[in-house]
Image (cartoon, rainbow over all chains, first blue to last red; front, top):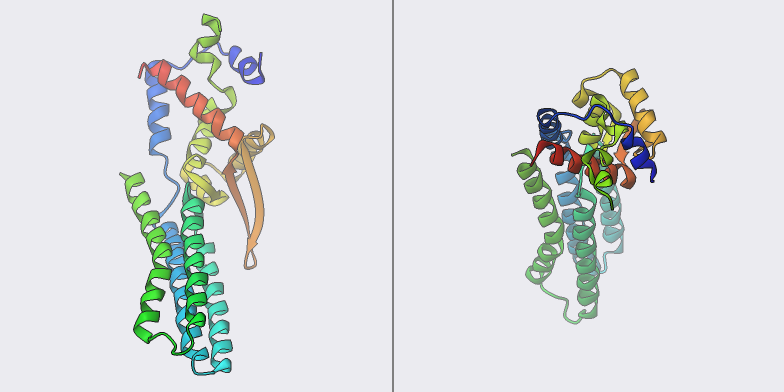
Length: 161
Length: 101
C-alpha cells in the first residue's frame, strides 16, 4: 500500500457531500493573482517585444550609415530598457499558472524573427532595405511577444469569470 | 483493484484536507509562484500560522519555498510542487466523488 493510501486509510470522518462541495467551490474560487500582477507581467512581455523590435530598427538606422557609436548607444539603451522591464516584472507578487510557457513561446518566436530579420537586412546592403520595409519587419518581430501579452491578459479575464 | 481501494477516502489526502492547508494549496494551484504575503492575505492567516503550515507542506514535498531579494527587500516565494499538484488533483477527485458530481 502506498504512503498516500496509508495516510488516507486512517480517515474515519469523511467530509459530507455538502462539505465536499464547499471545498470544491473554494478551490475553484481561489484567486491570488491581482490585476496589478497581470499588468506588470503584460508590460514585461509586451515590452520585451517592443525593445527587441526597437533594437532591430536602430541597428539598421545606425549601421546602414556607418554610425557605430550610435549603434553602441542604442545597445546601451536596450540593456537599460531590459533592466527596467525586469524591475517591472519583479513587481508582480504572484505569477499565474501558464505564464512561463506563454512567455517562452512569445520570446522564442520574437528572437527567432529578430535573428532572421537582422540576417536578412545585413545580407542586403547594396542597397540597404528601405525604412518602411525594416519597420514592417520590426512589427512582425514584436508581434509574438505582443500576442503573448494579450494572451496573458485574456487568460486572466477568463479565470476571473 | 478491490472495492475498498476504489473508495473515495483512499484518494483524500489528510495533509491537504485540513482547512488552512487546503486553502493554501488551492491558492497555489492557480499560480506558478506567489509571494508569502500574498498567500497569507488570500488565506487570511497570520505569518506564523502560514509559516507553520507551509513547513508541513514543504516537508511532505508538496510546496517549494524559495527565498530571495528584490532590491534590498527579502522575499519568500511559494509554489506547488509536481507532487503537491498531483496530490491536490487526487484530493479534488475524491471530493467530487463524495459530493456526487
